[in-house]
Length: 388
Ligand SMILES: [Zn+2]
Image (cartoon, rainbow, N blue to C red):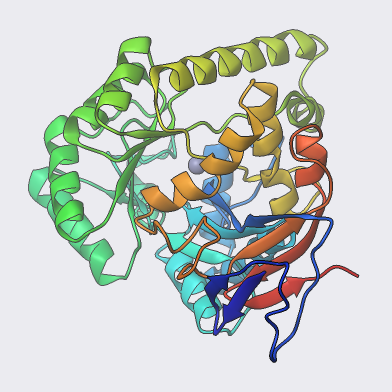
């Protein structure tokens, strides 16, 4: 029996004794009860059709989507995470000028319903951000989506601006391909030093191996994507306790994506290559001892609610040979630990926030089917989905 009072778990008791004196009893017998899940890489304020170009769509967003409309749309996407049992999300940029912080505050104060948000604010990046092909005259628009860093002193200032706006963590672009600019080692060191001084974690978008190495050398806490990290970089990550958030998708998802994007007939081949590469890297990372944190990075419209498309990460990790318990730890306990929320989130124990979900089915033998079958969702002691 899990006792919940004022949004917190105040006790876990022997079920053979009826401890109830007052309050509501929710019977979850027959289901598997888990801590609320955490998606460590989301972009709820950004949505792109599969057949659109990222840079082009970013410019359309910045010039045609009013911030108020963007937040309203984002709030619907955020809420959909609750429906699938994801009670906390880390929102990592592409969110205008701190619109993620505004959304977080609106949820925290109860104005709207949604998951607990850990907001990064604009991504700290080298000139151009991730929006390529923009002429000099319009580069200022990019500063409405990214915090462009111009030197070591400016790097420190950027972190302080973010602290002033109330972010929960710092996200940087160690590289920002296909823009060729990168943050220098010294800039990243300044960012990490300043962020850590304020008690904030730093996580780095990184696609190339060299940028991941530079970021790790600079002291970042995590690497996002890391598609091309080498074995020696993975070893560096394990030795320095740097986590990895793999953001690939399942083969089913990629097939659908490919169709929506209008790709050609030889899809099966590249999807297989993609899945094999992911699986090999994930297995290597696990073997080397890198902490894996679950994150979806799903911002593409595939005609389902965002929460539904994001839980595909469980399928992707499972397909890559990760054990169900390891996946669950990556989406609960370990993720919370990396947020500095150990004992508060991602666990069911006395003193933790009452973020509790229940799934139907056998997690051990029918893992993904069970994760698709969330029958109960509680966040902060408040019930959002309940068994009939
Ligand atoms: Zn992302």
